[in-house]
Every structure is written in structure tokens, then in C-alpha cells.
Image (tube, helix red, strand yellow):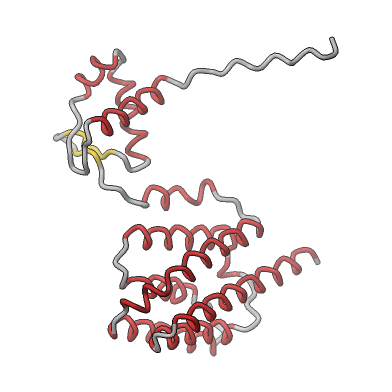
Length: 240
């Protein structure tokens, strides 16, 4: 039987409620429905699609879970405004916890933030600078007491880009942050020099305040190199 190609397995058709989901997505796109626009009643959709109301109901629930639709009790089903929240809510279930995941997430965050810091320098005002300095001061105090400052660290990165008023950017930063902490349990990684981590953040703020793009980019890069070193140290500790 040499030279004979193996028989490929039969591809199973998607389940009915998945097909209905695709049809509903196509309906939304073809009719150019926007956030807040209603869908027809379940009975009408079932009749048009030639399926049971249960199949339509399952498809709607699935689309609700990913943030495409929302049901308003006693009113109907509506197209939902885009949000990263479903991704954030379900992130913990799909993300691994290996240090390789951590390294890859660190690189994504580094590229995102280093690339966008020039726009922050153009737009940031005194109020945001004051908020950043307040947060870094709390980080310094915690570092001197050898306490974790994970919450302040997260707030710092959100404040750094708040002036851009970019909801998608804010959502991506939050996605990467939660993913990073889930994958690394970073708050529990051994940081040999918390004061150096505070100093990184302090220097980033001062570079931004001085409107020095190159220094801000350099400081952000160095900050993420420091994170990489913490990860490497903990990887070695696990091996030994």
C-alpha cells in the first residue's frame, strides 16, 4: 500500500447554534446595525432561519457571552457597544501559567507602551503628571517597607496613557496587565530590588514631564528589561 495517501477525516459540520450565530452576525453586518439597535423577535428569527426558538436562544446567549448582543428583560435583544470586558472576564480560563507566556506578554506590553509614549508626551497635562508622581511616591514608600505595590504599578501604566482618551488602548493595556499577572503571578515573584523598580517609574515620569521622548522611551525599555531579569531570576530559582 506504499505511496497511497491516507484518508482524511470527515469534517464535522458546525453545530446548529454555531451556524445560527454566524447568521445573526451576518444579519447585523448586512443591515449595518449599530450599538443599541434592536434585533427582530426570537420567533421571527426562528421562522426566517428555519430553526427552533431554542436554537436562536442558544445562539443569542453565546453572542451575549462575547459581548456582541445584550438582552434587556421584557424589552428585547440589542446590539451591544464594543467592549473588552468579555475578554477580561474570561481571560483567566484560557491563559497558561508558564514563564514563556510571561516573557511573550512582557514583550507585547513593551512594544505597545514604548511605541505610544511620544503621543503621551504631546498630550499629557499637569493633572495627570501630578497623579503619576503621587502614585510613584506611594510605590517608593511601599518599596522602602519591602511591600508589594502591584496595584500602584497597574495604576501607573493606566495613568501614563489616560490623556490619550483611547478606549481601545486602555482596554488593551488592561488585557495585557491581567494576562501578565495571571500568567506570572507576578506579585509573588521575587523582586530583588523593589527600590530599583520604583526608580524606573520615577524616571519615566520625569522624562515625560521634561517632554524628552528619547529618554522616556529609553526608561520604558529599561523598565521592561528589569522585568525580564526578575522573570529570569525566578525561572532559575524554579530549576534549582
